[in-house]
Image (tube, rainbow, N blue to C red):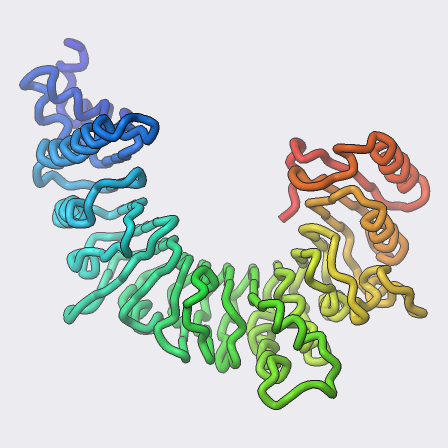
Length: 474
């Protein structure tokens, strides 16, 4: 310790930055010479789980809670007004008040914090402090709550975060007193935005930003969430999009000319599925089939992507747009998420409209059999079996969540028979859930024998991976 004490203060402060906040703070007790070194540590990581243990008796937990809050107060007091780069606070066990958390946040905001990472759990929605909305130093802001909500209520002064480049809000519901278009205008250099649990403020919303390159927007968390009438995107420099929402009636503007990768989830309920699949003569003027037709505008707006991933619900919605499906000339990778209760009606049109497809990925092969499945599968016999597959230039098929059923094996053979350019097939067995391999050794041997035979029957390398092999399927 004498050797360390002889080092310059800034060097000792750098050394402390490699310790946990709790360990670094304890060094202030060593001697007077070490008392002020802790103030030089630029990063603070505070976690109430290091103090609180739910299995302990209530009086012990209350005591530990007071110990944690006292520790945070002491840490901030020891550092005084020294600059701080990153502040991470986790209050998940319960008991810390919102007022206490906001007091700590205000202290680090005054000290010029640039990275703020907050994970909290309160019984009520968490209201962020007004000081956060006008911070001139924040570069990265992450807010997370698993069971509660986060309220972005700016008040009369509004929001302006001139340095913010990354905003990540992950909550059961995110409430903002401004429309998202107005909110984004407050972040002039924002590059990455992640909003989980978004509740739309208005029926007509626009996501507009000239600086955004990465966007994850999920508005399907709360059943009470307002369903937008129209959603527009004006994000000309966006490279990556993950969008999850109820189906809007219209998508008036979709400006994403730079988009490279898109993952789309358009959630529908069982009543809507029933109407989507109903014969045309049963439709009424207010039917979902008529209202969902504008989804094709969204697809046209993202048609320049190279990687496209579609959820099983999205496939159902797109079944209404097969005749107007845009051509995805740049798509090299197409990902399809399957579900037992959702059909593949749109898959043939997608395959036909991806003329330069190289990699086709499936997250599960089991899907609902409908009379509109098309020839992408062999669920229903058709005269022109495999037509959409035979025109598809895909070279690699990747499958995960393989349940090891004969129905899936027949579909795999259908792919091998009809994809003319197929060179490689990767199959990754489902890790959890029902699998015949887990209960029937004979099925296991049969499947392995069939896969071995594929090597001789087809000019395609077929490999079966165990879950522990971590088959790389995007």
